[in-house]
Length: 199
Image (tube, rainbow, N blue to C red; front, side):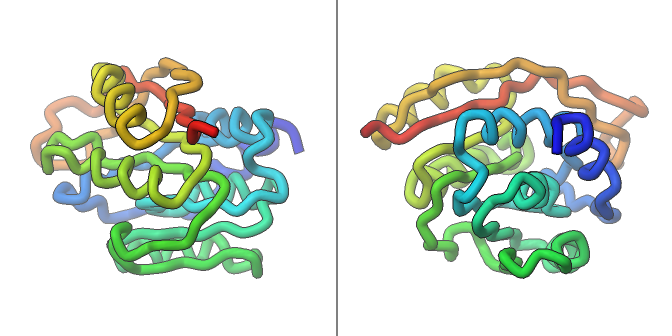
């Protein structure tokens, strides 16, 4: 499977329908998801590796890993409705496990953590909770954050024995899904962080 085929496959997955503002849920588009997964795959952190999709939503990042031969994928989300959709998207994969729990309750160590956490706009420091859990359970982390979080992520990574290997800057498109959205579409400057555990 190449990157284009991966993007097409991910775009066909069942998406979330009811977005919950308190959880800062936004759909990760197939093209961006495939770019993240493909990068992790090229880095040697997907194939035959165990992965966790934290705050998985529809499961698009974890499914991408499974499509590229991840050994095992865990999908974790507090939202029961999201987990139901995720289960539909992964039903053909026996090496997947969907867990409707708080991320703080997940304690399995994995090779790679994939996540598009809350930006911390509605609930301040919500992204910090995700990062701390990722540091606890993973060796490699691929995570989406607002680009202005650079210094914060650099600092928290160092404090937890990790190093920022790379930041890929992109535009993240957000469609009008919440009442406070005034435009049909928004473009948010984001970075895709690859963070690695110090050896």
